[in-house]
Amino acid sequence: MKYISSETTTWLKVRDSEIGTPGGDRGSVTHENFPEIATWLGKQAVREVDQAAVSRASSPGVTLEIKYDTRFPRGPNGEKLPTYTVATGCKVCGNNPAREAALADLIKFQTPASLSQIERWLAELSVLCASRQREPIENALTLTAYSSRLAEYPADVVRDALLKKTWKWWPAWDELHKYCEAAASPRRHMIAALKKPKPDDVSPRRMATAAAKKRGQKLIDENFPAKSSAMRNAAEPRAGNCMDEVPAEISPDKPEE
Image (tube, rainbow, N blue to C red; front, side, top):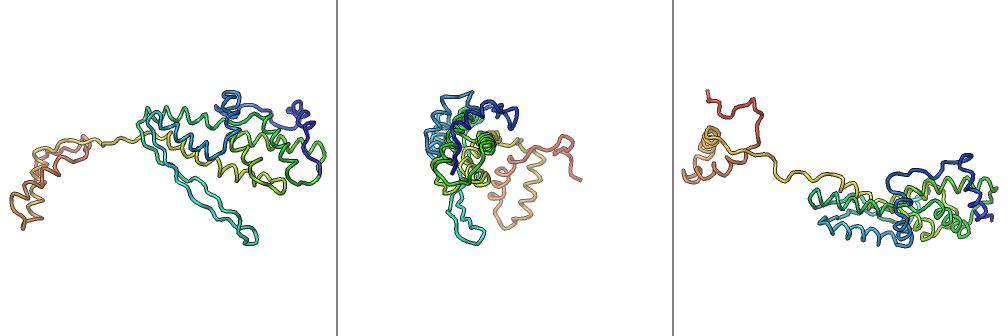
Protein backbone atom coordinates (compact mmCIF):
# COMPACT_ATOMS: atom_id res chain seq x y z
CA MET A 1 0.00 0.00 0.00
CA LYS A 2 1.35 3.41 -0.89
CA TYR A 3 0.29 6.17 1.45
CA ILE A 4 0.12 9.93 1.16
CA SER A 5 3.58 10.85 2.33
CA SER A 6 5.09 14.04 3.72
CA GLU A 7 6.89 14.34 0.39
CA THR A 8 3.51 14.74 -1.28
CA THR A 9 2.50 17.33 1.30
CA THR A 10 5.64 19.32 0.56
CA TRP A 11 5.05 19.11 -3.16
CA LEU A 12 1.54 20.50 -2.68
CA LYS A 13 2.97 23.77 -1.43
CA VAL A 14 3.99 24.78 -4.94
CA ARG A 15 1.32 23.25 -7.12
CA ASP A 16 -1.79 25.37 -6.44
CA SER A 17 -1.77 27.10 -9.80
CA GLU A 18 -1.55 23.76 -11.56
CA ILE A 19 -4.01 21.35 -10.02
CA GLY A 20 -6.22 22.91 -7.43
CA THR A 21 -7.73 25.81 -5.62
CA PRO A 22 -5.33 27.71 -3.39
CA GLY A 23 -6.03 27.92 0.32
CA GLY A 24 -7.84 31.23 0.05
CA ASP A 25 -10.95 32.73 1.52
CA ARG A 26 -13.30 30.25 3.16
CA GLY A 27 -15.54 32.85 4.72
CA SER A 28 -15.20 35.15 7.71
CA VAL A 29 -14.13 32.35 10.05
CA THR A 30 -10.73 30.96 9.08
CA HIS A 31 -7.68 29.48 10.76
CA GLU A 32 -5.85 32.70 9.96
CA ASN A 33 -8.43 34.73 11.91
CA PHE A 34 -8.28 32.59 15.04
CA PRO A 35 -5.20 30.31 14.97
CA GLU A 36 -5.30 29.70 18.73
CA ILE A 37 -8.95 28.66 18.55
CA ALA A 38 -8.24 26.34 15.62
CA THR A 39 -5.44 24.69 17.58
CA TRP A 40 -7.67 24.30 20.65
CA LEU A 41 -10.57 22.90 18.62
CA GLY A 42 -8.29 20.37 16.98
CA LYS A 43 -7.67 18.78 20.38
CA GLN A 44 -11.30 18.59 21.56
CA ALA A 45 -14.12 16.07 21.19
CA VAL A 46 -16.96 17.30 18.98
CA ARG A 47 -19.78 16.84 21.50
CA GLU A 48 -17.75 18.53 24.23
CA VAL A 49 -17.30 21.55 21.96
CA ASP A 50 -21.04 21.60 21.27
CA GLN A 51 -21.67 21.63 25.03
CA ALA A 52 -19.10 24.38 25.49
CA ALA A 53 -20.84 26.44 22.80
CA VAL A 54 -24.18 26.12 24.59
CA SER A 55 -22.56 27.04 27.90
CA ARG A 56 -20.76 30.00 26.34
CA ALA A 57 -24.02 31.34 24.90
CA SER A 58 -25.48 31.48 28.40
CA SER A 59 -22.97 34.18 29.43
CA PRO A 60 -24.86 37.02 27.67
CA GLY A 61 -28.16 35.46 28.74
CA VAL A 62 -29.08 33.12 25.89
CA THR A 63 -30.46 29.61 26.30
CA LEU A 64 -29.93 27.13 23.47
CA GLU A 65 -31.80 23.82 23.31
CA ILE A 66 -30.79 21.53 20.44
CA LYS A 67 -33.18 18.94 19.08
CA TYR A 68 -31.62 15.62 18.00
CA ASP A 69 -33.02 12.78 15.91
CA THR A 70 -31.59 9.27 15.64
CA ARG A 71 -30.93 7.81 12.22
CA PHE A 72 -31.06 4.08 11.46
CA PRO A 73 -29.35 3.73 8.06
CA ARG A 74 -29.23 0.59 5.95
CA GLY A 75 -26.75 -0.50 3.34
CA PRO A 76 -27.41 -1.21 -0.35
CA ASN A 77 -28.36 -4.81 0.49
CA GLY A 78 -30.64 -3.88 3.36
CA GLU A 79 -28.07 -4.58 6.05
CA LYS A 80 -28.19 -2.47 9.20
CA LEU A 81 -25.53 0.20 9.47
CA PRO A 82 -24.40 1.92 12.69
CA THR A 83 -26.99 4.34 14.06
CA TYR A 84 -26.11 7.97 14.60
CA THR A 85 -27.74 11.16 15.82
CA VAL A 86 -28.11 14.40 13.91
CA ALA A 87 -29.32 17.80 15.04
CA THR A 88 -32.56 18.88 13.39
CA GLY A 89 -33.27 22.19 15.08
CA CYS A 90 -32.50 24.56 17.93
CA LYS A 91 -34.74 26.49 20.29
CA VAL A 92 -33.33 29.80 21.47
CA CYS A 93 -34.42 32.09 24.31
CA GLY A 94 -32.95 35.53 24.88
CA ASN A 95 -33.34 39.13 23.76
CA ASN A 96 -31.85 40.41 20.51
CA PRO A 97 -28.70 42.09 21.98
CA ALA A 98 -27.91 38.89 23.87
CA ARG A 99 -28.45 36.83 20.70
CA GLU A 100 -26.05 39.03 18.75
CA ALA A 101 -23.38 38.70 21.44
CA ALA A 102 -23.82 34.92 21.60
CA LEU A 103 -23.70 34.65 17.82
CA ALA A 104 -20.42 36.57 17.55
CA ASP A 105 -18.93 34.22 20.12
CA LEU A 106 -20.40 31.04 18.70
CA ILE A 107 -19.09 31.69 15.19
CA LYS A 108 -15.56 31.25 16.56
CA PHE A 109 -16.44 27.62 17.32
CA GLN A 110 -16.66 27.17 13.52
CA THR A 111 -12.98 27.90 13.00
CA PRO A 112 -11.37 25.35 10.61
CA ALA A 113 -7.91 23.91 10.90
CA SER A 114 -5.21 25.17 8.58
CA LEU A 115 -4.81 23.38 5.26
CA SER A 116 -1.37 22.14 6.31
CA GLN A 117 -2.85 20.62 9.47
CA ILE A 118 -5.65 18.93 7.53
CA GLU A 119 -3.08 17.52 5.12
CA ARG A 120 -1.12 16.07 8.04
CA TRP A 121 -4.27 14.42 9.38
CA LEU A 122 -5.01 12.99 5.94
CA ALA A 123 -1.47 11.65 5.69
CA GLU A 124 -1.89 9.99 9.09
CA LEU A 125 -5.23 8.50 8.01
CA SER A 126 -3.60 7.05 4.91
CA VAL A 127 -1.33 4.84 7.03
CA LEU A 128 -4.19 3.76 9.32
CA CYS A 129 -6.51 2.33 6.69
CA ALA A 130 -6.14 0.27 3.57
CA SER A 131 -6.33 1.83 0.11
CA ARG A 132 -5.42 1.03 -3.43
CA GLN A 133 -1.99 1.97 -4.70
CA ARG A 134 -1.86 5.41 -6.30
CA GLU A 135 0.67 7.31 -8.35
CA PRO A 136 2.26 10.38 -6.67
CA ILE A 137 0.27 12.82 -8.81
CA GLU A 138 -2.98 11.08 -7.87
CA ASN A 139 -1.99 11.21 -4.21
CA ALA A 140 -1.45 14.93 -4.56
CA LEU A 141 -4.78 15.48 -6.29
CA THR A 142 -6.57 13.44 -3.63
CA LEU A 143 -4.89 15.41 -0.85
CA THR A 144 -5.79 18.81 -2.25
CA ALA A 145 -9.35 17.77 -3.14
CA TYR A 146 -10.05 16.42 0.34
CA SER A 147 -8.27 19.14 2.32
CA SER A 148 -9.95 22.02 0.48
CA ARG A 149 -13.40 20.53 1.17
CA LEU A 150 -12.64 19.60 4.78
CA ALA A 151 -11.55 23.18 5.40
CA GLU A 152 -15.25 24.11 5.32
CA TYR A 153 -15.77 22.36 8.67
CA PRO A 154 -14.61 23.18 12.22
CA ALA A 155 -11.24 21.77 13.20
CA ASP A 156 -12.64 19.39 15.80
CA VAL A 157 -15.14 17.94 13.32
CA VAL A 158 -12.42 17.24 10.73
CA ARG A 159 -10.03 15.63 13.21
CA ASP A 160 -12.87 13.49 14.56
CA ALA A 161 -13.82 12.36 11.05
CA LEU A 162 -10.26 11.53 10.03
CA LEU A 163 -8.64 10.16 13.17
CA LYS A 164 -11.28 9.38 15.80
CA LYS A 165 -13.63 7.42 13.57
CA THR A 166 -12.25 4.07 12.46
CA TRP A 167 -12.02 3.52 8.71
CA LYS A 168 -11.11 0.10 7.36
CA TRP A 169 -10.69 1.47 3.84
CA TRP A 170 -9.78 4.93 2.63
CA PRO A 171 -13.14 6.76 2.79
CA ALA A 172 -14.81 8.08 -0.32
CA TRP A 173 -15.59 11.79 -0.16
CA ASP A 174 -19.31 11.02 0.05
CA GLU A 175 -18.70 9.08 3.28
CA LEU A 176 -16.61 11.83 4.82
CA HIS A 177 -19.07 14.49 3.69
CA LYS A 178 -22.04 12.78 5.35
CA TYR A 179 -20.10 12.18 8.55
CA CYS A 180 -18.91 15.79 8.78
CA GLU A 181 -22.36 17.17 7.97
CA ALA A 182 -23.91 15.19 10.83
CA ALA A 183 -21.14 16.17 13.26
CA ALA A 184 -21.31 19.86 12.33
CA SER A 185 -25.11 20.09 12.42
CA PRO A 186 -25.62 21.14 16.09
CA ARG A 187 -23.55 24.34 15.84
CA ARG A 188 -25.07 25.17 12.47
CA HIS A 189 -28.55 24.99 13.96
CA MET A 190 -27.43 27.12 16.92
CA ILE A 191 -26.13 29.78 14.56
CA ALA A 192 -29.24 29.68 12.36
CA ALA A 193 -31.45 30.11 15.43
CA LEU A 194 -29.39 33.00 16.78
CA LYS A 195 -29.51 34.80 13.43
CA LYS A 196 -33.30 35.00 13.62
CA PRO A 197 -34.37 38.11 15.53
CA LYS A 198 -36.61 37.61 18.51
CA PRO A 199 -40.23 38.31 17.53
CA ASP A 200 -42.11 41.02 19.36
CA ASP A 201 -43.62 39.69 22.56
CA VAL A 202 -46.74 41.79 22.22
CA SER A 203 -48.49 42.64 18.95
CA PRO A 204 -49.88 46.18 18.55
CA ARG A 205 -53.14 46.61 20.45
CA ARG A 206 -55.57 49.46 20.98
CA MET A 207 -58.18 50.24 23.52
CA ALA A 208 -61.69 49.43 22.39
CA THR A 209 -63.80 52.48 21.56
CA ALA A 210 -67.22 53.10 23.08
CA ALA A 211 -68.92 52.05 19.84
CA ALA A 212 -66.93 48.82 19.69
CA LYS A 213 -67.79 48.01 23.30
CA LYS A 214 -71.45 48.65 22.54
CA ARG A 215 -71.38 46.23 19.61
CA GLY A 216 -69.55 43.64 21.68
CA GLN A 217 -72.07 43.94 24.52
CA LYS A 218 -74.91 43.50 22.03
CA LEU A 219 -73.40 40.26 20.71
CA ILE A 220 -72.90 38.92 24.21
CA ASP A 221 -76.50 39.75 25.20
CA GLU A 222 -77.84 38.04 22.05
CA ASN A 223 -75.75 34.89 22.37
CA PHE A 224 -75.95 34.37 26.12
CA PRO A 225 -79.48 35.37 27.11
CA ALA A 226 -79.60 32.76 29.88
CA LYS A 227 -76.69 34.39 31.72
CA SER A 228 -77.35 37.06 34.28
CA SER A 229 -76.98 40.72 33.36
CA ALA A 230 -74.01 41.03 35.74
CA MET A 231 -72.15 38.17 34.05
CA ARG A 232 -72.81 39.57 30.57
CA ASN A 233 -71.64 43.02 31.59
CA ALA A 234 -68.44 41.59 33.10
CA ALA A 235 -67.61 39.59 29.96
CA GLU A 236 -67.51 42.52 27.54
CA PRO A 237 -64.78 44.62 29.22
CA ARG A 238 -62.45 41.60 29.39
CA ALA A 239 -62.72 41.06 25.64
CA GLY A 240 -63.14 44.64 24.54
CA ASN A 241 -59.54 45.76 25.08
CA CYS A 242 -57.88 42.89 23.17
CA MET A 243 -58.52 44.05 19.63
CA ASP A 244 -55.84 44.19 16.96
CA GLU A 245 -55.11 47.48 15.33
CA VAL A 246 -57.25 48.00 12.22
CA PRO A 247 -56.28 49.81 9.02
CA ALA A 248 -56.77 53.57 9.17
CA GLU A 249 -59.38 53.52 6.43
CA ILE A 250 -61.66 51.35 8.56
CA SER A 251 -63.30 53.44 11.25
CA PRO A 252 -64.47 51.46 14.28
CA ASP A 253 -66.66 54.41 15.26
CA LYS A 254 -68.74 54.35 12.09
CA PRO A 255 -72.42 54.53 13.11
CA GLU A 256 -74.35 51.33 12.70
CA GLU A 257 -77.00 51.37 10.02
